[in-house]
Image (tube, rainbow, N blue to C red):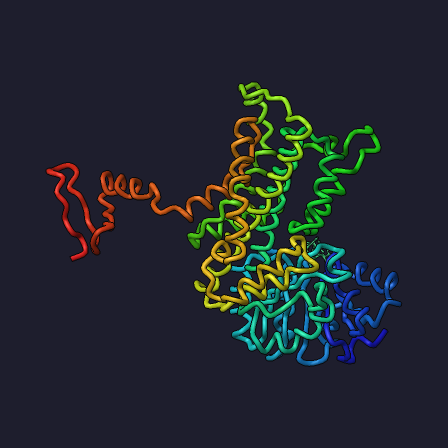
Length: 485
Ligand code: NBP
């Protein structure tokens, strides 16, 4: 342990609840001297008492001591509850900092708050880095996926430390990279969580279909997921699905999944993703359906009121048909996954253009290959697609992914159609298929929608046969006038 006033710590962490404590330990374990501070001093003391032997910690009792303990330019990681606490901490530390110092917010901030904070600190010459951190407390300790936004100068000073403590992908590359200026890192982290919601919903629907249509008990479904996890669906979420489904509840002796109340909660990043997508005008139906599905599951009153409504009663398939059906579900799940990832990437591209972030979309896939919740073999291929063509308009247009969705589409339709016949809700799988069909359509009924808008609101329309903007005089002789001069 060093003297808090000597300015020897390479980095500091303030906010030592589960995330901050583990991040500080991770940094110390990698040989960095870490100043540690928490509003309530007991947490600082406990960290040093319990884990002081893991590395070189410099405990600080006050913000002034904490700042003084850091070598220059100072690197401070703020790991407090997102929102008002972050503003309070930044407000407390800012007067103690000097130009060139770097404040890193590793909390789950909304990217617009990060943009605001970055701008405010920039005026004082202090760098503000909004860094998305994914992987929960285990990740923070053993290697998270880290998505820092901010200036190039800040990344140059911070990057090597982040690369040390980040998860490593299967090829040894660190799961972190400079994502882009100001709010880019927190934006990308938000989309990560949105994609995570969509992935989880699709997996849940696949399980529901295996159970209701194939007639597989949870333990059998677990085997199916285990097998899928050795193929193109290989991912953390499919792996834990197999484990959860195979687990027996000790109290009741029933499958654990049957002992859990069927109301899914959410912390809000999925909702942020959808709200932001609406503002950007980017369709992310897969993520939206996942957010709504969680919301619906928790609406006890609505569900009780509708419980007696009629639905089909169909017996599960026989053994041979069930195996064939399970294979079709794998195809539907995979094609839907491609579609929802494509939506997430479309959103990052749109925001990158809107805010001038210049996000490298292939790098984002690389950063998510380890440490985070959506880590998956699949992401190597997403990266390859964007590396091959950084201007790729959508993942669905990549030749390999297009080939796979095309090959899966009959099975995908069969699964969605079967779900409808059995009365099993599959909002994620069907929204993904609808998105696929809408994007590939030669003509959409949007023509009728626009004509209706012209009828009741004189909103005008473009024509397929010639340029210009037109309005039909619906209330008069239905003649057409050109409205763009
Ligand atoms: P919490 O989100 O539970 O926050 C607790 C910390 O915030 C404590 O250190 C607390 O200090 C501090 N704090 C609060 Br609350 N108000 C403060 C204030 N006004 N001034 C100074 N400090 C204040 O901690 P966490 O679960 O470790 O998460 C930290 C951040 O990381 C959050 O933004 C979270 O969203 C994000 N994150 C969490 C996870 C996860 O899996 N938990 C994953 C990824 C990101 P005290 O000890 O004095 O009360």
